[in-house]
Length: 136
Image (cartoon, rainbow, N blue to C red):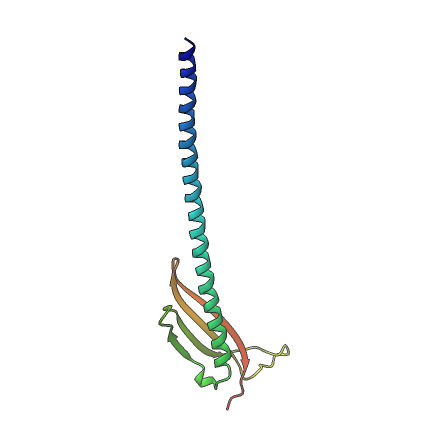
């Protein structure tokens, strides 16, 4: 009789060991899946930040370049062939008074725009600069 009791106890322990292994593998698989999702999200976010930084640098460069040109030559439009982003600049007179009711002359608002598509649809980023440019 004693042998049969030892056999039952040992058999039950082996069954729990198998259950422990199955639970450990399942837990490991769930953890790895979660980590992969987080890493994919970090990659997507990083790519979005890189695109936004690229757009900001291009807009700043356009404003710096176009502000030195005559007012008539400030309008510009082009499409970046690698990213598909459309960059555009335009200028319009800027009306403001000096606080005493007199209008300040020769002020213009130079605007640079970037238009692109992302997961949310069409996006437009703008940068504006108020410049003084004497009429010639």
